Length: 289
Image (tube, rainbow, N blue to C red):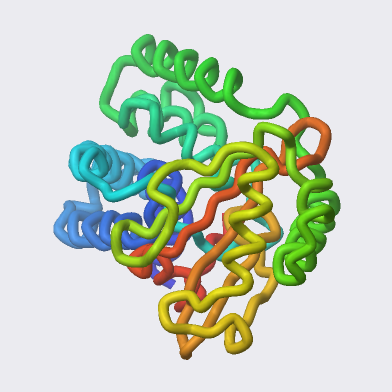
């Protein structure tokens, strides 16, 4: 195995968390390989740190461009879901966390990812993002405070997450409004991302009754030409937790993932249906760390 291939999964994992897009992360890794291929490797004392520095800066550059594009995005913008293994730190890659990280600057996001998800020291991060250590420490503090105020204090266990996902699936496909209501926090918010390419709610759906009614209705009508009776659904690990993948007409149609509150109820639902964002799920591109 080449030195680059040895670190490829790490590089993809860093880039994905910074960008929230598997496709963009793959592009960043490919660009990093091109730079690595043309580098004078005799001058590289630590290939891992060198490659992380390259991919971090490439990801930050891509994020700056992406943020400008997202300002004109049709409807809510959600990260691109990816299948994950059980070895992944769920708290560092959840859809809900990636949504929160969207509000950080590219530098703050990269620093947060390198520190909190991968345990890099401040000196290492300063070298990677080409900033002073003091600047990095300040960025890390701002990012942590931002995340702390927007995430539950006590994340739900994996077993609770799976239980809620299974019960939600059974209730929504069966049109059982009462069972759905039992799972939802009163102020639950549903975010749907169709990117203007498929029919989805263009604004967040807020409140347990509205969200339950929305899902019960969706289960009874055709979606993008696919009849509900012809749809398939499977529980799949997505972004570090159990989620649901819907399929039909030979393709992945949508994914649904959940964020739970401190009491184990659903506080946010992320429904990704933009076909441009389902590539990683369709191809099985798995995040392993």
